[in-house]
Amino acid sequence: QVQLVESGGGLVQAGGSLRLSCAASGKIISINVMGWYRQVPGKQRELVAAITSGGSTNYADSVKGRFTISRDNAKNTVYLQMNSLKPEDTAVYSCYVDLVSDFRRQARWGQGTQVTVSS
Image (tube, rainbow, N blue to C red; front, top):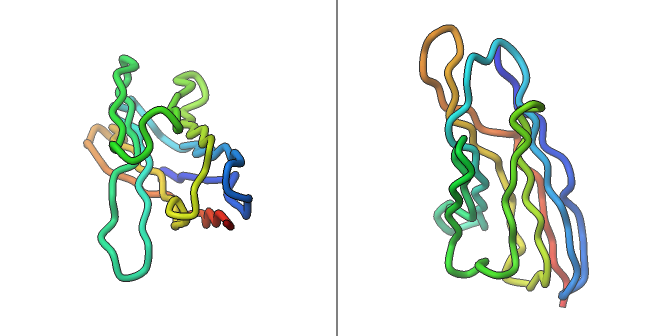
């Protein structure tokens, strides 16, 4: 079994910062892409940022220059540093991991963590 454990959400004022973490554990052979999505009630889930095993990154236009995704391959952990937060960043953030376990490629999602940015 593979588990993802997220941490780091919370309430912050506009202009503030938060750092999200997502650690994968279990019988993991390899991890390809790790990423963060967010969802607001009534809207589609959107990709915030993703990072490959080689370190290539991709960001939503709305967060470029403010958010930074990184990963620690030794710890199977992905981070999302969020700076200059805006009220429109308020959402439930979920990590996503594309991995190989039991010799099968699988996708795993974290439980989600609430990020609330007050104006």
